[in-house]
Image (cartoon, rainbow, N blue to C red; front, side):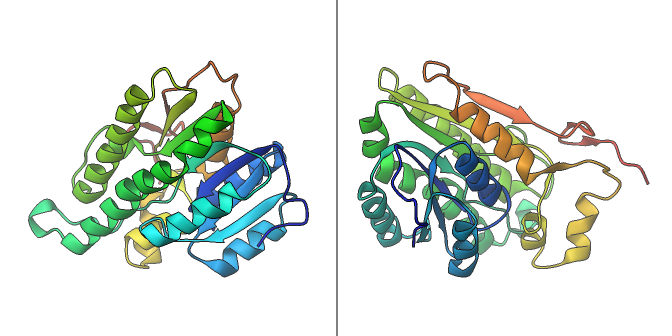
Length: 257
């Protein structure tokens, strides 16, 4: 489904666009003049997002599905414009168990969506991004991709792997006109991330942000993504680490209790 003004000269693809950082990024890219291809599994939320944008196409797809990503690539290739930006935002965390009692199905899901999903979509759209002559791939990793913490083994392992993918891809694309940007947010409060991680336990999710007056929000990270993507194309922001002022490090958070 597309908005009435689908034809444009600049196309940006955003995965995980149905809520949170993905939806905020889609809105800010739309405001910056991109035609946004919003990708997610939830059709109802995608439809609501796309109808609120001036120039957008919704593609219902799961980044862990080869067939879905192939169909996404076909849709994007058929649009009137230059595919200049891919934001690999789809991802997430499940559980907070120690390694010795790890739920391997949770680990499998985190690797599938964060790591293999990023690789799958990047592989599919890289030819189009390179063809534009000014392609940019944004990988939304996390500060969890830079340092580990207790109870986060599955998520930190997946995010470390995603960071490794971004770094490797940048080396492999050297000399070609495609930038690779890694964004590593710290504590970001969204409607769904922590709730999903803790199996729908809203009280446990709220405890993560307890006493933090001003955590980051989705719009803050979207602003960072759009800023990196709209620099002159010879400027590559390799890695942008962003935390709220209250979070000095992964384990150092000021709380007003």
